[in-house]
Image 1 (tube, rainbow, N blue to C red):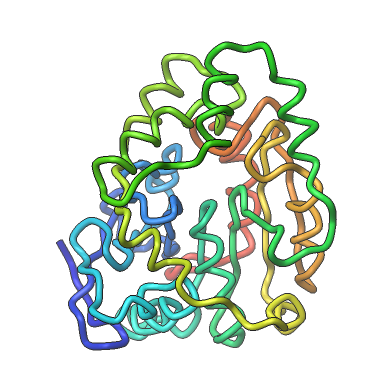
Image 2: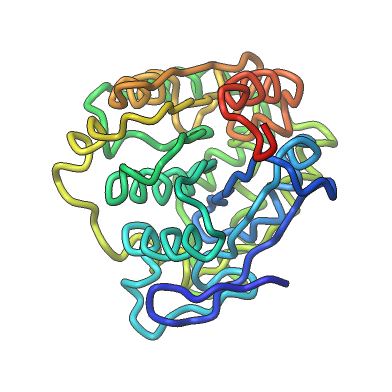
Length: 287
């Protein structure tokens, strides 16, 4: 597995996914969770067949170690690791794709290194910490009440994890998993079982608060930004996701129908249509 040196000199790992054609647009994909093994991203509905995906194992996840100083593993500080990865890969600018909590890291990088961002794709981002628009997640939740699996997941989500280690934290995740999908069929159940969480890395990820002017600083990110939301995402809601796109001068949003928190799993064709259209503006290395 390829590695690079992080901001503190630690050896960090990443997955290198591509079709074998070296002349592909390179895209760094940041997993969410927070601190979920990036295997749950899969190949993003076949995106690796057209793009060259670099998927870092974030601090404390997979084969990348958790640092002694937990703040280094925060989403704000891990932006420095992504900058080191950019340099290691020999890129002048980076294309970032983040999912869920991974969008916090993508946004942190863009705020700290705006001149190095070629573009971003933000998938089902939590946006309440950046926008003042009231969430409509409760309305989406109310529309789902009465579904047994959903009701059980909502109860577990409301109670929160009674956990202080990986075992308990990972035992709680399947209980709340149905909350993240617009339907709870065989494909969704199989996907929910992929990718373990690191409890310590999850806590470290939120150990540093971003600056209070973070939302304002996103106005300096002039690169194109695509925000993709699920029209049935009970975790993020719809209104805050749309509002997030408006913080970027070149931001746009797409809402995918009959979709929750994992668009590449729930609606792969619509997901690829939105992302492929966005990426067409970027020339491949041999263009």
